[in-house]
Length: 110
Length: 113
Image 1 (tube, each protein chain N blue to C red):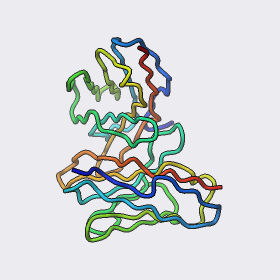
Image 2: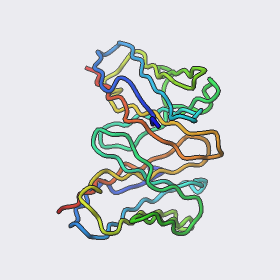
Image 3: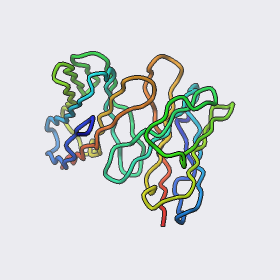
């Protein structure tokens, strides 16, 4: 069993839709949770960085962490074609060893 | 303010050869990590360098080695290349604050034939 599970998609939505991306994990020692966006031929770009359970909002993005269920989510409101990318969840116990999900491919159609 | 820069952007090598990849961290960052990203997969942690020493290592063989220089830049070396080493190699850096987030470069695409 992988430490972090993420549905690879692709997820295809119309412009303006609310997008929900999710990851589950098995290691209860993970303390920090991140979402990265990766465009084709580019490196991952940090979108959200959270520590505790609960919600964190930044513009059109909301990250949600439920440590009791070992489940994290990223919501994108009013999705745009420019949001089309691969979204990677990542988790950290300590140091620099991020553990990533496989990534979900998102396509927003105009 | 330049972010994390990596060179070269693309590289083609033959099985058995050796390769060196280079990384300059974001300004103000002193900790560098390397990740390997196979096609269709998430990045996997190779190792981390801080104060010119390897501090943490993932599940990669000794063929993968690295170095950090006094100016915080770093190199990743891979010996005896295998076809399975073909991947995007990502460098990430962060500052010295406790558990500050990682910032990634655009990677070096290595193809082993």
